[in-house]
Amino acid sequence: MLHAVIMAGGSGKRFWPMSRRRTPKQLLTLVGKKTLVQETVERLGGLVPPDRTYVITNEAHVEVLRHHLPDLPERNVVGEPVGRDTAACIALSAAIVSATDPDAVILTLPADHLIRPKQTFQETVRAAAEVARESDALVVFGVKPRTASTGYGYIRAGEKLAELRRIPVFRAKQFQEKPDAATARKYLESGDYYWNSGNFVWRASAILTQLEKHLPETWRAVMEIREAIGTKDEAKVLAREYEKLQRISIDYAVMEKADDVRMIEASYEWDDVGSWGSLENVFTRNKYGNVIIGKHCGIDTTNCIVMGDEHLVATIGVSDLIIVQTRDATLICHKDRAQDVRKLADQLEKEGFDAYL
Image 1 (cartoon, one colour):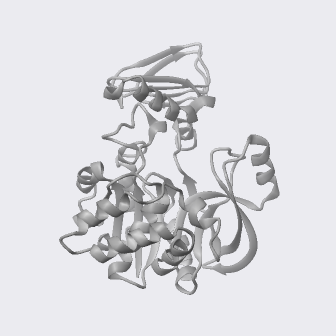
Image 2 (cartoon, helix red, strand yellow):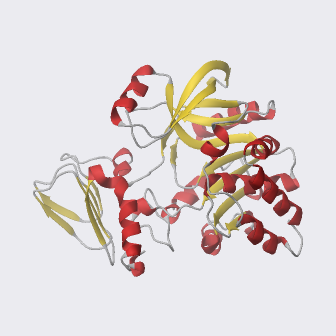
Image 3 (tube, one colour):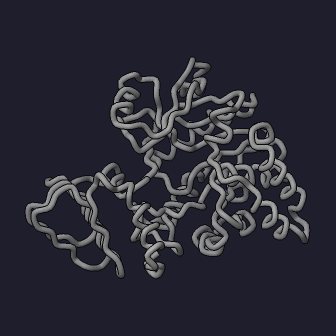
């Protein structure tokens, strides 16, 4: 059967000052009236039922996520005792799902991406699940790039292996880190490179086999955790073993080394909403090139992103800025420095501004 695992453990520091420790990015309402994680679960409607949908999150956010996702069984919202990046999260989820369904096919996806339309996304998942069921392949979703973005990792497509439901499937030839601008332009021009969406489909047994091969200590730890599921020692074993896990991404740990990695072309609209700058991909700009969310009055203000909470934001003679106003903090930065908001959040912690984090 098809299961879904939603990775919701990130802190979303690039969305400070809206994203805080108590309300990380996945709990923000950036588009529409629902939080990003609620939209992610809703996107699965008709594809994966709530009882086969799991959320892996920071231990501190378990209760609030259960409140945001009342249709999911409480047990399906799982707290990581410590943050250990995506390889550990995926290993834990595969162990949990395979404990009750050894033949499970798992859709693994982040909690905070924007994907439209739902129907096209679901059709792509069904095609990827067909690939996974019939092989030991790990399937990654590759998005055809619209621009020469330096904000995403890339996948180089190899030979075309099949076309399922009119959706092409390729051998994943190479994974590339976020490139510089010149390299990104080459990738776009070649037509062989896709954005790495961080969405995956695999059989639980297939990903666990690759983890055993390439990350054996993590595999051994999650096998211990699986053995303890449903026993009185479950929480104690999870806390003890998870502490041992290596902090590493699934791309570095497994995807770049695995025996059979395939890429399915994602033809739907996708954005990882990775920083404030990405809102320009989501919202319509006004005639001055500005994205305005909230109350704003401006003179000679162009190509800005302005997001207000309750207060009016007024600007004169500025361009290419990000301005985000909340109840107790305001961010002003150049759009070219949007990725550095994460560094600013770290700096706030170093300088003792914990009340604003």
